[in-house]
Length: 163
Length: 162
Image 1 (spheres, rainbow over the protein chains, first blue to last red):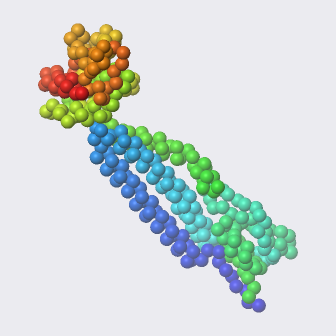
Image 2 (spheres, one colour):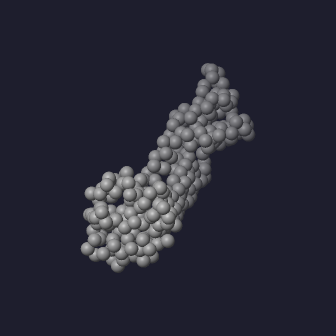
Image 3 (cartoon, rainbow over the protein chains, first blue to last red):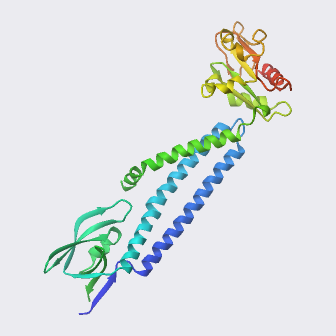
């Protein structure tokens, strides 16, 4: 039986992440510019009679648009950037092959300003070895019949299935 | 659930943004909707109720030449900066407080009665809520609009309002 190595992050995945970051950054830039222009327009059109209402509207617009932009910048672009960094590291670093029965052990890792990961166990003749797999790729690994893992910096970079 | 957890993990950032936004746009609007004392006439009213923006807008319909804005404030506004009131151009005060603020008034003895408590009729009473006693209008001692007549002209317009 021939074995097949499946990368958790292919070049296409990396390019997809780069594209996602670019699109979101452009969208947030446009949203920020639109909010700023709206607030400037409110300030410019304020009269003695409307100044208080315009000021309240500008502050509200600024706060709400800022919250949305901050949220997306941190939790969408930030998460994609971290995942891109993780994927690039896994693709370019040296790997160790570990063969055995693979299973997810239910452990979850969430490091601040890093990716979320799930625990993986490999039953080898020498004993059980524990690693991590990116949360976004854990499902893919779980559904596979992986017979061996390629490990880089303690994380699963690829897996091997028997054809 | 994840959304709420994310928001709470960055709560300090969201609160900081809200504070900065409020401070920045308040400053911008103050900058845009205010001008130097030479280009505005400031009216300070010690009254229980006042529609300050509406009254200022009404007075601006017939503003003196060279005047860009007319600002109307209640005395509560003065609490934030006492310097403002010292340069006030026009004051509306209840009879009982004239002696307290007499150093700000050009002629404390020569105020013009703009509200009569007995009859209940007064100037600009669509904008100003008077209460209990007679009210008088004065020009400010330190007004920069005494020589150009702008303070007097605005005072006349205010007295003429219904």
